Image (cartoon, rainbow over all chains, first blue to last red; front, top):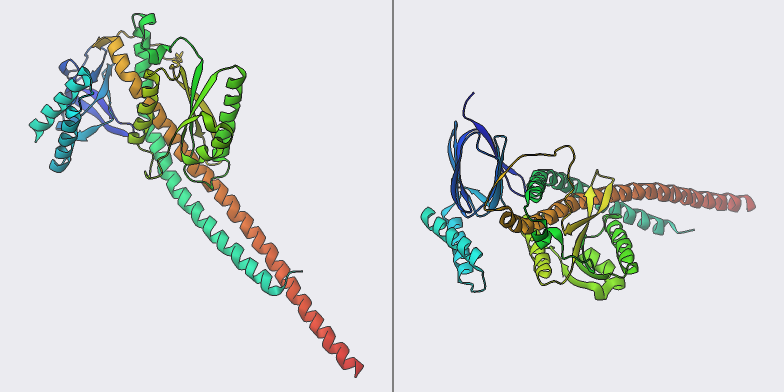
Length: 130
Length: 291
């Protein structure tokens, strides 16, 4: 058949997105961006702040995530995340708020290197979106 | 026998109570629907999270070097118990059931000579526990201001717990909550979250080989704190559905009782009215006869 697989994005409150006609997904994995096509090897990884780009038959969609876990198995891609926004619905003011929060967190000196790295990432992504 | 006026007053007072309980029942029913929905919607997340962690802990290379959140501190001396209750009353045995379960657990722990620390979530639990276990309660968290259970609050509780764990303030953490079964049945649950108990589900013994990026240990140490918040969030969702269910059936009972009481009082009212009339008639007739 075709080159399609299934994606499910779940946040704690509900199943955020379910699509069955996906051809390619690009995720911001912790160690760099990762493109997933059909029949990818089973993988578990986690996300850094960035954009999930979903290429589907029905068109391209972009989501902004701040963290999460990715599991790919048997052509099912599950993304568990507590903070996910559809880029289409994300308003400028909300973006600015997120950016401001991130910058405040970056100025906090008590953070360790890893969270510092994550916050820098977040600021970078948010700035590019603005 | 109470006078007619008193009876009348009582009837109106019971009736207005009935109106209130009826309204509360209806509100609870509406809220229950929403709470139940969100509990159901929240299930995939915690299930998936569990699955991933299960796969990860199976694949972990060095069991001795596993993160402490998974393997524990190696002792079981200090127990932290998180008792999750509601912030509002008038919900039947909802809070009492959790407290009873928790107290049993506390008793067993103290018999075994373990040290006990308590965190209460929700003010009702705090009210009931502070008399007997006041000095053991180290923190009381209440989300009176948030309307629905949300993940943000759960994360706050999770962070508090992890912070204490990192500081070596306890060895084992258990949470108490009510699991929602249906409107009349809620089952108090005890669940140990630190160290995590990974029950290996027999039917899904997946021999899948995963690729991990970065390695297992790092993913696990990133994931386990999140899992704590997830478990707490799940407990909060179950709890809020249970609370509304318990309140609904309690208010249903109260409405029915009030109805019965109104009936009884009305009969008594009619009877004493009749008695008064008869008495007056007898007085008139005997007065006429004596003339």
